[in-house]
Length: 402
Image (cartoon, rainbow, N blue to C red; front, side, top):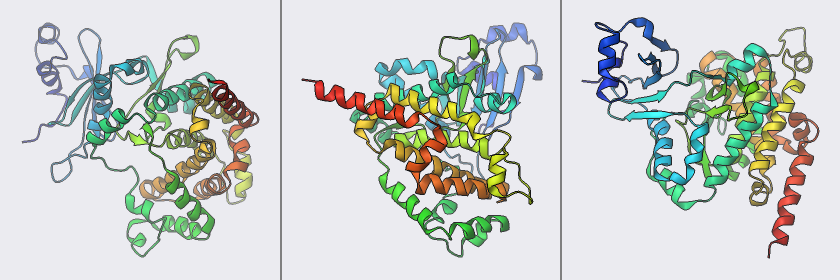
């Protein structure tokens, strides 16, 4: 019989696994655990936030079982990062910007972690305050580059991930993604009526399909990648303004793998662009160009953070421009691909494709098909100059090395 986590058995489960003290519980809660100390958190998995008698907070996550009584195994991917650090202690310094994982129970598909009460979702900061501090973005770029740099072409690390395989479901239906390469009659059975408008429009752009196909051919798995670096998978400290310490945590490593670093950086940039595109003023009386102009969160407001993100990445991992001369170009293209998957998610889950989707498609097409001319649009003035100076510095240092 499958163990189903709930508010009545979670304390017993934590005690059995040595994560809280039963004597303290008996003194604090002589009978049944009060519901006020257990909070259900909305998420795709079953998540319980448990406040212990000593005021520690634990997040207990259990994957949902399907009709066959099985799970996708995604939480193993989350725990795999913890196991990776245990296997390779030279990467111990990563712990300051990763989640604090305490337990993985593969039999019950449960992961327990410390709840970081002094952090909040970065998407929450951005949406509620419409504030995009470059300090935060720069630290995201630096930590991402640290992961890519430290694992770059390390065969022992690659073998670890090759042997520890995650059995996970993709966020976007593979049929929807594959349908971009060859749109057939099966699409009528999986896409809503509004979604079919997207595929009809997509077919008009041969250059877009060609750019996506070429981008896939350039994929070069060379380091550990997060593969789901969207804004709600990043935490920022509540007191980030007054802190000189690490203020960012990169969480939800369920989809991590040995991959292409340009994908991580590009899809992160895509998350920023989706803030802009999601704020468009949509009206039948406005053209797409006018909607872009009247966005409530204009691109100009986001550009400093996008540029800070990229420049911090190159500052932390300057060798990347020598290893991959076309790296920034590929990053821009992956930002476009991130917008395409955003459209596919909209089609799959929201069952719609409206003017916002059309605007996303136009921007995605520009990034994928014209990445060089799109750089200044995304990053604002200065980013190309900054990257060129990084490249020149690396090349000069290599030439001067005896």
